[in-house]
Length: 295
Image (cartoon, rainbow, N blue to C red; front, side, top):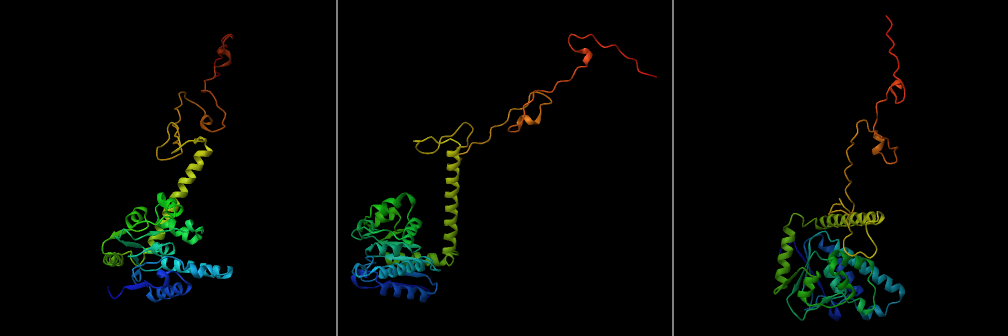
C-alpha cells in the first residue's frame, strides 16, 4: 500500500470479538491515523464475530452502560473519520463486526460462499441501540431494512451485496479493497467525504419531509380515502407529480361591468351592471316633457 494509508487490523481472542480492551485500542488507532486513507480488516481469517459475550454477560448495570457508551464512541469515531475508509471483509462479520463494516465508506467482501455477514441481534433477543439503528438506516437501502434487521439472518457475500450490506464482492478481496481505497483517496471529495454524505442525507431527509407534508395536506383535503392502497387518488385537474390539485381556471366574465367581488371568496355576487333608464322612460310612465335649455 501507499505510504499515506493506514491499515487498521481487528485482532482479539474469540474470533476478534469486541471487548472493552479491543475497542479502546481501535479508538487509539483511529486517532493515530489522523485522517489518512484507512483500510479496516480482521486478523486470522475473521473480520469480527461481534461483541465478546463472555465479557458482556459478566457486567453489572453500570458496567453494561459504560460498555455501550464505549461502543457508541467507537462507531461514531469510525463513521465520522475524516478520511476515506474501506472495510476488507475476508472472514465472518457478524452482529457488531458487521456494524463496524457498515461504518466504512466502502465494503469489499471475499467471494467465499461459506463466509457469513449479518445483524442477528434480534434473534438473540437484543434491542438495537439508537446509534446502530441510525447507521443501518443510513447504509442499507430502505426496501431491505426490515429484512436485514428483523429477519436477523446471516447471509453469504452475494446475498449481502444484494441487500446493501456490502458494496462489492471480489475473488481477491484485499486487492479490490486497496484499489477502492486508492480510488476514494484520489477523488476530489475523498478528504471531505463525510461532508458530502451529510449534505446528501440532509437532501434525502428534506425530500421525505416534503413528501410527508404533501400527503398530510391530501388527507386534510379529503383526497385520500380510508383503505386506499398505493398513491393517493387524484381529482380532475390534479398534477400526477403532486398530491395537491392545480387551481382550476376561473371562467371569464361574460358581462361587462361584472363586479370584482364575484371572484373573491365570500364576496357578494352581483349581476351584470345595467344602464339606468330615466325615470320618465320607465315602463308604465309617460315620457317626461322636454325642457328647453335656458339661454
